[in-house]
Image 1 (cartoon, rainbow, N blue to C red):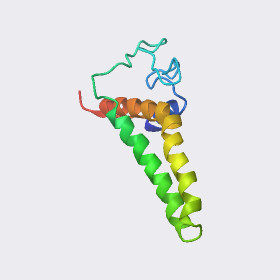
Image 2 (image 1 turned 90 degrees about the vertical axis):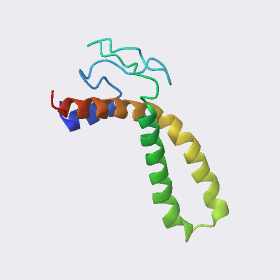
Image 3 (image 1 turned 180 degrees about the horizontal axis):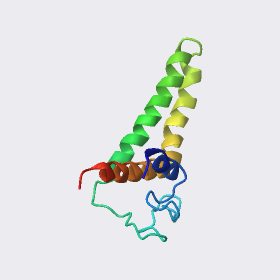
Amino acid sequence: MTFWRTLGRGLRLRCPICGEGRLFKGLFSMAPACPSCGLDFRREPGYYVGAMYINYGLTAAVELAVGIPLADRVPMSTLTWPLAAFALLFPLWFFRYSRSLWLGLDLYITSLAPK
């Protein structure tokens, strides 16, 4: 399992182990397990809190990367609504990707641990 393969599978919303099974069965509901290799996607309570950190971190980084350079050039009254809409809509869209990336990152890191 390589880092880049795991990252690619995460961005395609596929199982981080086999790359075949889909992680989500609906817009926001995860499948209980991979239909291909059987990897259990259900984890202990609080496991996916790390995915929320990824989601929040990327949202904040994009907001800052766009908002700070534009703050001197565009009036705040014009800038507020697009940034607020982005802050509400982007995390909803990125929810699936953040969970997928968190699961893949966790499995990648634990695969490096000595056995």
